[in-house]
Image 1 (cartoon, rainbow, N blue to C red):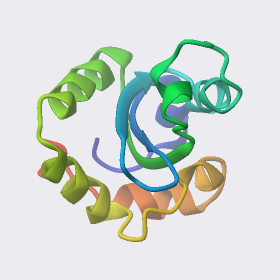
Image 2: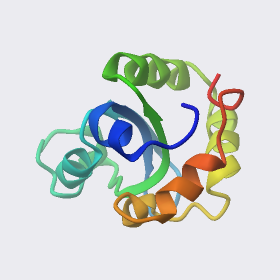
Image 3: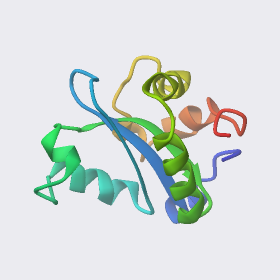
Image 4: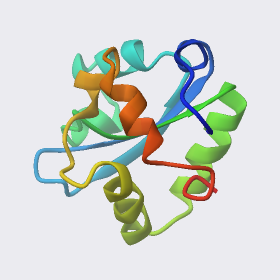
Length: 122
C-alpha cells in the first residue's frame, strides 16, 4: 500500500470490510470503484446479496492497491483469517469503528491510510 496517492486510489483497486449496526457480521470485498460499490451495497443493487441480508452498510476498513489484482489477493488473504484478526486489523486504523465512507472523498483519507503500513497489510 505504501504512501497515499490520490490518483492511485482512484485508478487502482481497494479492499474493504463492511459491517452492520451491531458490528456482528463482517463482509470483505474488493473493487476498482469504492464510491460505486458502496452505493450498490447501500442501495441493495443486488437483491439477494449477503450485504443486504445482513444489513451491512458501515465501511470500517479500506486498503488501497495499485491494481485490482493486488486488492483481490488481499481480499482473499483477509477472508482466510479469523474474526479476531480482522477486528485487530480494523481497529489499527479505525478504533471507533466509524463509517469511513464519509472520508473517501475528503482530505481525511490520507490520514486514515497513513495508519497502515506494508507490515500491517502483509
